[in-house]
Length: 308
Length: 188
Image (cartoon, rainbow over all chains, first blue to last red):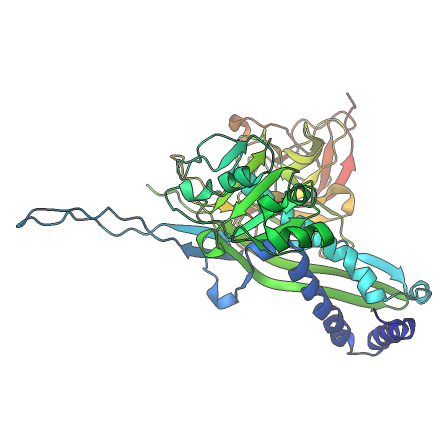
């Protein structure tokens, strides 16, 4: 934690940069460094599908719109190999590769305005406090979009997914035990793609069910450690576990499972998170924005289990 | 046969005065699920709450609805990215965009040049404009389309007053220039 003197120095530095003509860029950069770090740490969408930077040259121009679009190739299916007797030729198939589109929109924080003289009375790190709320808004929106897409793929428990023909959203009875959790990890590999779960997403209430596991279930020192220190982010059952406090997006007793992002789709970042700051006379205004696009090109790498 | 694409300027608004500025009055919401047709850029919509209390746009205005002139169409690349083929096969599931459209609000004080008007009629400066409602597929050509037909002040909701009127714009598309206003119709 910075000291109060350091915080005041930071605030004064920000004001100086805003006061000096032509120095707005430096002020923006000062906030940007902090902003981008927080985004990577806090948004679970970005951790499950890390954003890939895309440049103008990589966009695919369209006839009917001047808005950015990226066309992504998908691995094609092919007829299976067969055993044949001698003097027999193979069947033909014409190569046709499927593709899908990634389109973009913008996430914008609310625009904050304030009289700079009122800002002078704050003694906390003003850059951190003021940008934190905006980042939280943007992260919530980003994660909300991601979960809306996941829920669109997995709408109803027990119903086969349109693309895979396999059930990827199941209800498992018996609470969260070693047996039910291992059963949950079988849902994704049952699809024709046979993907293994790489990342598990649960909320901060669901994860506490694991604290109830006995030493015989959890195993040795790990059990001792979590009963002493609580759940720390770690690999468990050969999966990375992400715990979120966004219980509105990830319901309690639900487990969302994701394969490696290369099997799911693309999350492109066309414009990284940028803080716009402007000072006009004594009024300060600022907001953050970014431009992102994402699509699941293949949904066999998504699964969900609700524990009952 | 493949569907013929639109040119980017065939439907839409040029806002001649009053936009773009950080303080411009606009509004964003998803299109109501009850709308059975693609809504082009430039159409007039109004705001309602759906069954879950979410903001949604519906084409046209009635009673005391506030008019919103759409900057985005419902099929624009920053609004929708459908991932199911016509025969129902999966292609992709979009994370973005989310289906939100944006438009300028009639009280914002704009002079607008819109492609979405009844170009079979004549328009004179000062004519009052309204836009019919409709969500069914057979309303696709009329719902949210500007017209000066059958406008009775304070009975029909008025969304604009004709400025320079009808002309062919620089893209060769028929457009109607008007100032946005809000004159409510009779309340139900």
